[in-house]
Amino acid sequence: MADAKTIIAARAGRDLKDGQIINLGIGLPTLIANFVPEGVDVVIQTENGAIGVGPAPAPGCEDRDRANAGNQPITLIPGGSYFDSATSFAMIRGGHTDATFLGTLQVDEKGNIANWIVPGKMLAGMGGAMDLVTGAKTVYIVSEHCAKDGSSKLMKQCTFPLTGAEECDVIITERALFRRYPGKGFVLEEVAVGYTLDDIAACTDMAYAVADDVKLEAFGE
Image: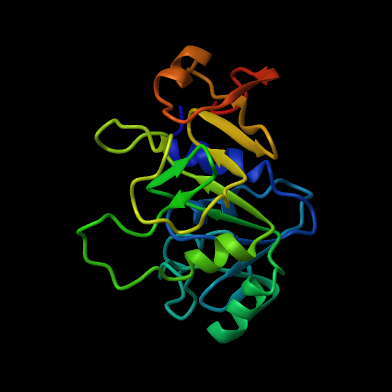
């Protein structure tokens, strides 16, 4: 079976829709560029100033002048371009991004997202996360289900400083997929291979409903 990050990225790729402009956050979300479904044409934007990002370059083919916001090497598809970060953030803040995919430290049952700092740790700043969660039309959290200490990242209430309040629309982990609906909160719609409904309940602190047509063994092979 693939590792957790690959499982998450592959499932997130299946949610991409033809014609979308999407933003991939640093770390795990950048792997999604490798899982764009065949026949689906999406335009990938990076907050540091590039649009038309393609799959990761093959080993040995990296270009030091082509990198995403996390300084990872990227490729550009034909027609891709570079521009300044002010133009990039004008796109994000102007609501021109259809979806953003971000990792997280915590996300809670109200859709609050805390993904930029652990209290007491040194960090230069929030970066573009606050702009992305408020500017994108759909906000995906793509993250491993539990923290390194085994605690759930899907919480009743975030305890870390928030990146955005009630902004998360979809959560995809290596174990499950949840979507948030107005008036309903999060609904468990898919369970990954190797897990049961009881397993998800045991590792998820936030409240959620289970879809009538919940799909078991829906992804992860």
